Length: 41
Image (cartoon, rainbow, N blue to C red; front, side, top):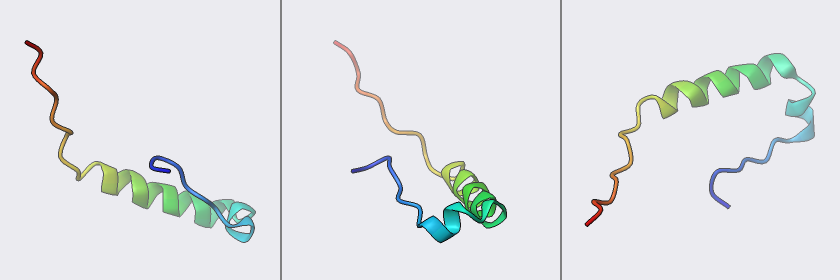
């Protein structure tokens, strides 16, 4: 499924490392172009 992630148990228990992954993902998302919208007629 798109929009979901699976986090391994060992990473889930290491909140410091997990936080760094969330930060990396947030920065990456900020580099994406906005999705084109459909014109309504």
